Image (cartoon, rainbow, N blue to C red; front, side, top):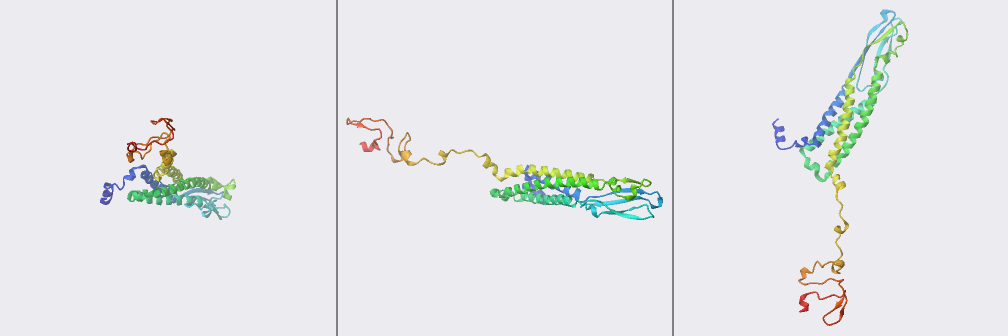
Length: 293
């Protein structure tokens, strides 16, 4: 606790109070919720098969299944209602691909969020150096946002199929003894999938967090300055040639003051000079008062 208090006093965790760090904390937390609610799931359902001959009946058939939902490997025995024999049935479907993909994205999101938080808290200045850190962070965040979209949609569809495959009413339709009217088959206990529903909700919450975090990471990249920069006119970027500055055209010679003399401009109208001759406007006049003396 003393180490934590010293770090807080030194301002190491002030970034957590900012949107950039605070959203990373939320991503870290909700990633844990996502893979824990899905990866640790274990469910079961019960049904009963009551035969015409009561001695052949089985009133407590329990079927258990769990993550990663390879249901085609889950089997159970049911009575055939014929001479005390049983038959082995398997559930239908393999939904491990969507479930494992969802959990994998959640685990890697958790690891990346934890690593990013460590960078923000301890080497934030190096992270912002030359904008390389924010730009890499932006690309990785965009990739995770897309992965959350794909994995959440895939797992939502997979969960819908899991619910259908583990519905006791659908399983009863696979039992041959239940097709005979003298036998009675019914469900006793339905599987509870509220935890799996929550995992899907956490998946889409993570999607919102990662997509929303793109804006705050984008502001750190420095790309915004390139989009919001002001236009600089071309004449301010390149100085005018010396010939235009010295040739007059209404522009004074910038070096005239440093030479200690006065140089008149070209382009003046022609007129008579003191000797009675006509002077053209483009004739250069004495360059300084000292020459006239």
